[in-house]
Image 1 (cartoon, one colour):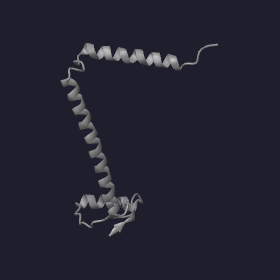
Image 2 (cartoon, rainbow, N blue to C red):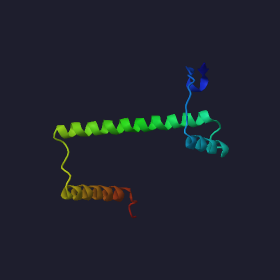
Image 3 (tube, helix red, strand yellow):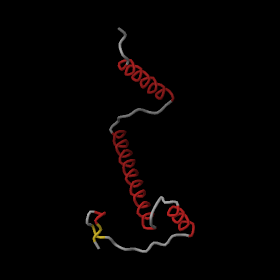
Image 4 (cartoon, helix red, strand yellow):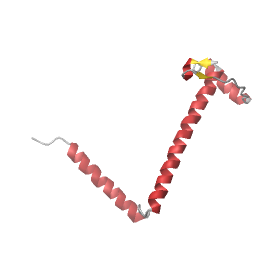
Length: 106
């Protein structure tokens, strides 16, 4: 069956078994008006799962980029001193930016 909400994609019916606690949770959401139907709860759960997986993929990509950068000899060792240097640099740049955004006295 075509579903216009899915851009004309075909929908597939499937049976999902919930635990009693999950059923009660969904029922409470329906009774409170947060969702209309049980199917909406499953769709919302899948959307959240998809988002979590997207973020996971982004984190893994960033880790790979970091590993590649380190393999090229970029980066710096993390020590107390290097962290102080980074903090001092951030403060210095932040103060310079703040000063540049302040209105000049007349």
